Length: 111
Image (cartoon, rainbow, N blue to C red; front, side, top):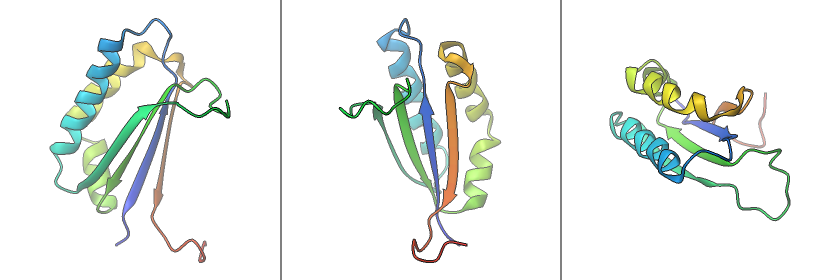
């Protein structure tokens, strides 16, 4: 089974304290640690000089060993708690969050 990547972009309110942002990412790490099938998590604030971020301020990528692990993680109470923590700080409500999952595949054989 192919690995699954989850790309998440967040558009946080400018008034969101740095401590709250740090708490989001600590909870994300705790969520990842709870599932052995989470292979990698990387995260950070936007930093490109291109200016193509459309207001999104932070992002992260999680790598899951398979679809089942991703689904288990999404259905976990810790995931719901993380969303509840983040949602009040999104500058455009749910439009301030993009979650995009894809299976890691041979880039020369898209179907």
